[in-house]
Length: 151
Image 1 (tube, rainbow, N blue to C red):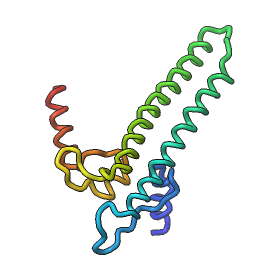
Image 2: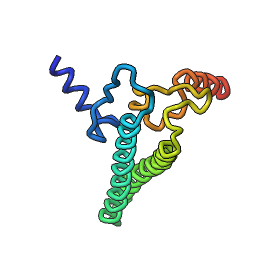
Image 3: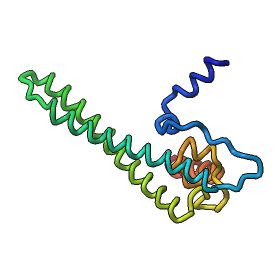
């Protein structure tokens, strides 16, 4: 049991990045109360900061390690490595934009509710994906539609 508990907390997920434990919902607690909002605000801010730090680190790494290798294979390997790093950083930038949109929703008191049907998204789903803007049912339907459209 102890090993399983340690395994869960050591996995790299949004909660562990933020250094937070899963939210413990209290009996008869109102959805998206101050404690829950603060919990998600901390998660999102920490995640955003970490992503920004990774972007800065990548840029410094590329600048510091850019070497003009005489061997074309070595040069191609380095360029491919840099290309992958930059692609990952681009994904991080897009995620930062989603995080900023979600933080704006928190400030507007519109966080935690489905954009499609307005039901509660749910604490556990939001902990797994804090930028989620659809409940699990609407997301499932959207994915089914997407699969049908792409064949």
